[in-house]
Amino acid sequence: MTDGQAQLRSITSAALLVEFAVTRGVATPDLLRHTGIRERDLLDSTAEITPAQELSLMRNVVSGVGDEPGMGLMAGLLCHPPSLGVLGFALMSCPTVRDAVDLALRYADLSFTVARHHLVLTGDDVSIVRDDSGVPAEVRRFAVERDVAAIWTIQQDVLPMRPPITRVAVSFSPHPVYEMFGAMLGVEEVVFNAPRSVVTGPSSIQHLPLPQANTATARFYEQQCADLMQRRKRRQGISGQVRQLLISRGGIADQSRIASELDVSVRTLRRRLSDEGTTFRELSTETVGLLAEELLLAGMTVEQAAIRLGYASVSAFTSAFRSWKGQSPGYFARENRGRVSARV
Image (cartoon, rainbow, N blue to C red; front, side, top):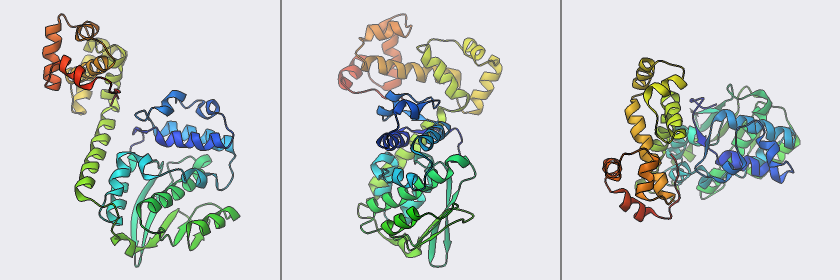
C-alpha cells in the first residue's frame, strides 16, 4: 500500500480491472460485490475510491478469473499514460527518464500501484524496488504482475524505443508463462523466489531524453498533480467527514449538530479541525460555494439556488457568491452553461 492508507485514488484503475475481468467472462456485479463501488461509478472519470476498495475489487477479480500465473500481466497491459490522468501527462512531458521516474515515485498515490516503491542505483544498474508488505497475500502475485506489465507498457509508450529492462526479480515460483512474457517484453533475465520484487535496467537509461519533453508543460502538470494530492488529502480526516455531512444536508447544518453526528463535543471538533488547518466556518463556506456552483450548473435559476441553500434573499446569495467566485451567480451560470459539474 502507498504511504497514505486512506489516500483517495482515481477509479480508473478499478475500471480497467473490471474491463479485464469482464473480458474473461466475469459479471460486473460479481466483481463489485462488497467493494462499495457502484457500476455507474466506473463510468465517472471524476469518481474516487480508497486503496482498500481497490484491494477488495482485486480479490474479486482474482477469485473470478482464477488465481493463475500471468493474469496480472495481462491486466497490466491495459495501463497506458493517459489512463493515469494528470500524472500520465506529467510523465510524458518530463525532460528525461530519471525525471519521469522521480515524478512517478513522488506522486505514487496518483498511480495504480498498491505497493511502495523506491529507486536504487548500483554500479551500472538502476532498479525500482518494490515493498509488498502492505499488500494482502491472496492478491500479491496478481498485483506484482500487473505493476510489472504496467511499468513496461508505460515505458514503451513514453520512450522512442523498447524499454531496456535487463532483469526482473519476483517473489513467487517459476512458471512457463513468465518465460513467455519475459521474452515478449525483452527482459534478459527473470529471477524467481526472490526476497523482493525488483525491475532493473542499465543506469544509462536515466539520461535518455523523452520525445515529448517540454519543461513548461511538465511544470504545469506537476502542479496539477500536487493540487490533486492536496484536494484528496483535504477530503480525509475529520474535515473530510464534516464536508460529507454538510454536502448531504445541502450545506445547511450548524456546528453542534455536525459534532453530535460525529459523536464528539463542539470543542473537540474545533480542536481537531484546527489540527487539520481549517475551521467549521471555512468548511461550511467552501461546501455551500461548491453546492451553489453545482445547482447553477444543473440548470437552477439564481433565485432557486438561493432558496435551496437557505438564503433569506437573492441579494444575500449574490453577495456571498461574489465573495467566493469574484463574479455574480448569473454571470457564472451563463458562462458555464452546459458544462458538466465535477465535485472535487
